[in-house]
Image (cartoon, rainbow, N blue to C red; front, side, top):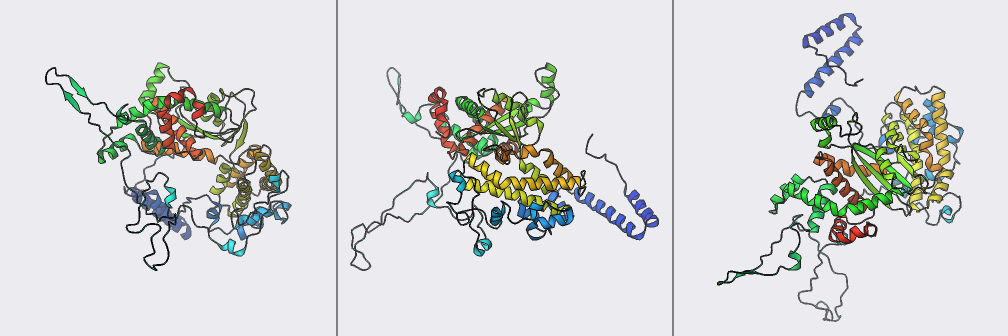
Length: 586
């Protein structure tokens, strides 16, 4: 059944009749409410009929809040949830919290000290984690001072970049115009000048085209008698295809790394007097992708052996599987699952035993679970089933291979964020508890604990928090303090129904809490979709998946994706023979 209500035409005269009838039949206060509703409806229609009206303007007009951040401090801003949104405030309106919720000696009390300042060298003693030595004692934190509590952290991304941040800059030494080391000081006339080895840098940024053309004019000499033409031998750098490996890497990086479509590249190059037609740019990328296929195959093979797999997908447009083209394929019987109309880009991020991150993109008609089935066919059968982190959709789970399922806690948290306006104290209680879990996990990352050490920390600190959450939410449902069919009831039931999958990190070493890494990976595909809109056919989608997989995996490991793609194309022969030697971390 469609969620879109039927459109009913209402004439202005009918609205006037409604107001007159309401004024005579309804009490004055209800008649005023009816009048306000009709006026609001008229105003909405008038504003919607204006072509320049935006959704943001309508929200401001009707006083609707739009939250662009899901951070706890932003979500709770403006809500009366008590001091720090503590448990007492939540229990005041939603019933009593568990007895342990109000205790001050719980294992997570030390973590609560970091609520005013994130864990860092100032708050966390480097030698504090007895856990790092293999014990089960909690990490001990030094209490934050008042100055640290009141100190505001500077936002990231502000301030000037040092000249050291430009490793590819051309460094040009400039000697003093009149003085040299060993000369007598012209100011005091006594001392000798010496080189400080600390020159004063002046950094300037110079613009240039992404693709630059070079033309070699080889001299041609013709014999006046026989007419034979003798042409100069071109230099080594002039030999080879018209588009060099560096040009191919640049086009791939612009299109799939930054989302710049070929037709925009064409316009840019025309403005820079180095024309590269869109069709030519695609041909260069298509041919270069063939040289890179062995590396993608090796990445897929190693990803299949991973201990942890993150997976998520988003929609994609492939014209060959849409509209009349799809109808023709269906008539010819050349499409499996003819009832399926969706098209998806799946991002699979694998964590190998060596803690290497590999991201594989797959676009087409298959769901994430079906793409995982294809990938896991490459897995060594002697290995234990991998851990699969995803949201709660059934289509994300492979049907033909065994995995250990874990669900993303952020998805459950997001349901609570959506209900903060209606249930501020209850949501605040749950959000702050979940925030403590993330602070504990952040401490584990800060101290670089191993998977086993991290598991012991979570079992010591996080397990009591999760028990409190489960007990509290169960009490709300069983005590009928929350209506099960309300938004809050559905959010709580969402968590309780999948509780075992939300708490895998308390039982399995290395199990993540959320699927954020896969969702961040999908932003690359979404960026491409928002700019290029669609792929023409399956070949274009496979080329895009290949390029995005290589670029994103290189970025995982801090490799320069442009230099990496260039190296693969320059050494294509050796890459084909030993692709495992040419992965981004080698």
